[in-house]
Length: 355
Image (cartoon, rainbow, N blue to C red; front, side, top):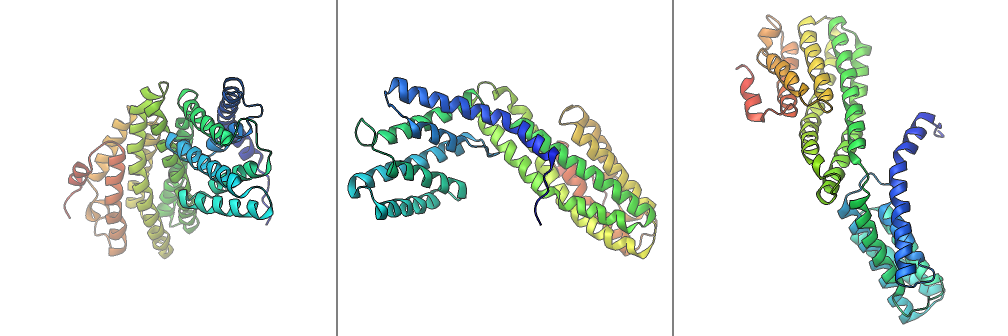
């Protein structure tokens, strides 16, 4: 089926691309100026194209990725210039250089886009006239581009924190919606609500992966950027929340699958629904704690209260095996949520009542 154009997604993508586009423009212009005005190259084409390829619009804006990309592309340019001096220009020479460049690029990086970028740069070397200034002038262009791209990454950084917060909000919105649906499913033995919760939870892994990539990128940039260094404590706190919520989400998926099966017997389960509703309140507070860290304490207090009564016979008097299984499955979920709320896992496990 053809993909339907989504105006909202298009607008969000456009807004998110403004800062990366500005960074690419500044870096490319700087590369051109250095190569043209300082080094005297008449047409510093590779200085501009390598800069664009090194930065790109990828979510992963870590300096090490920029450096690896630049180094890989420069290696391709050097290889192409060396082969050009050795075998000259022509059809079979172009094929040979392109093949070698693609093979080397695939060996250096698992990224398909990286191999394509290296191949394009090698073809520019092979097909364009050799510039004045002697051999390997274009390799110097590429080195200039890599250095400039790395400097601009530090001095004009993208702000992956914003993307990380957006991913975090998406995750918590999905979790809150899923938990609300599970409460309805348990209270009313409502199968559609259980299925809806399971569907929502199945969409969360790409969001978690995106959040993790954004945080890794932000932490790496903060190490070298004077403008983001002061944000490192906030990034460390987010990373702690992410780790806990990743595990919690995995556990919640398993629980949701169990509840989806359980409610088919038509029995209402208000006791388990009450626990699930309390979990929903705590998860909502955890999400809000990313903007207001003090709310993590409130979330932790609520989770501790849930953990201390999480025994099958406490939640449901004379709980049947089917219900007991769900309650027992909530125990590791509570530990993960308490870890996200900045309680050590050992202490979180110690809070659970003995069985």
